[in-house]
Length: 261
Image 1 (cartoon, rainbow, N blue to C red):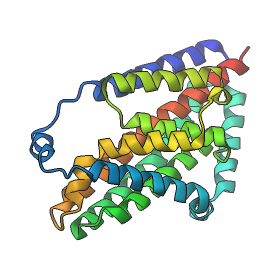
Image 2: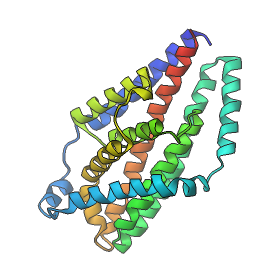
Image 3: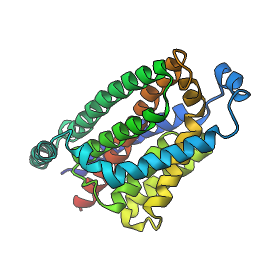
């Protein structure tokens, strides 16, 4: 594949990543955030943190096989192989961008489902069951995004990468910049260079999510009004999905670059 095509696609990618970081780097607290700050129970964040961590452990230990029953891995593998063969044959930029388009469509579908689920449970004032459903959809989404780019999601290295993606996607400011650079470094040097454990990455992801969703999950626990909090599932699923597509796209482009030498 001609390097000029890859260089153009990498430049396109870098602009998209810069836009994501810029959008989430310097967010100011909203009036609702300031109002809720004094209303939040002291133990809610630690309760949320524990709930997210427990949900991650449950899904990875017992739920992955059930998630896999909800989509065809064979179809995704075949689609990737066909798209990859076409890319190798043509070397065109539009064929390279096909992977991102398919991954983005996958993310949009999950975003809609998570939004509807969150709003429904928000009306009922139930945020605890929503956490397991929300994370199941997040992980199902990333499983499929990974497969769109030809990556097997079953190894511990892939799980750690996935958890880093989830955690980084919901960060803001300097934390986002630092975590994004760490992910890019892993992509550059290889996932095997991550010396952390899956449990460590679960703890980090749970902590990031509990902080990001604290105010909205508080609202979701209030019947009827909880629809506002439930709608946060839509917002954060979209954010995580968009960021996951960016990071898997980066991996794919870097692999293409290495293979071009």
